[in-house]
Image (tube, rainbow, N blue to C red; front, side):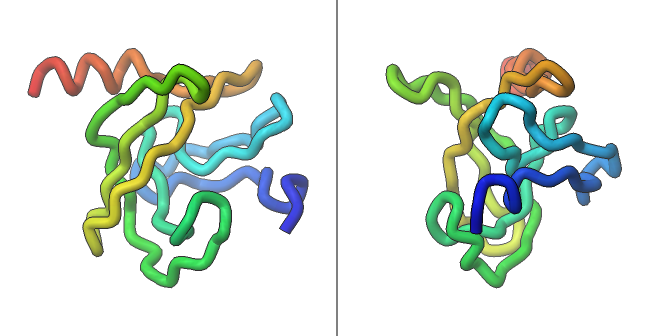
Length: 105
């Protein structure tokens, strides 16, 4: 599958908002508003998972080469996965809201 095929908009299954494709050459795998994702991959980008559960953002991690990453846990099977945050001209990730939620506990 090419990045052009993968880089499509979608409706977030958690919050219902319309999510636009990225314009920065990458592709989006989570909602920029609520930061939830869908469990589609066994390994990042392979789209080989049959789970389909909602991936909840539970933490924020920093990697010197990848930058900030959202820690997601699948609410159906418990799979944990890191996803790079997305900066985009149209819809950047709202990581400030995630940090505020994490600080409140």
